Image (cartoon, rainbow, N blue to C red; front, top):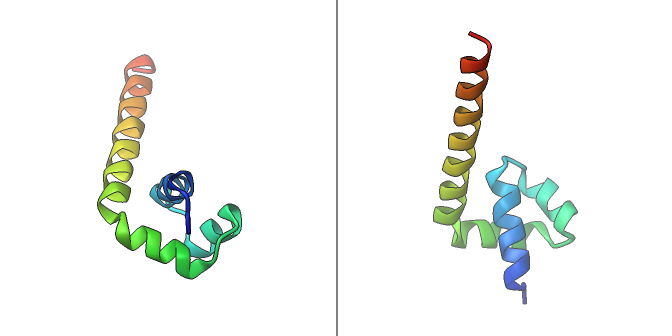
Length: 68
């Protein structure tokens, strides 16, 4: 059984764009388990991806304002 902490870790790693293989290696769990977690938590992964994109866009806008 996978702990809730492992689920969160997999979700965070997937949201950053890592592959299932890379996540399995980093988290030290099997690739099928990673895929199962990602399928079960796809909406959370998508929300985390959106949050990351928003943070990047905000950072880019700040830099743009500084260097104009």
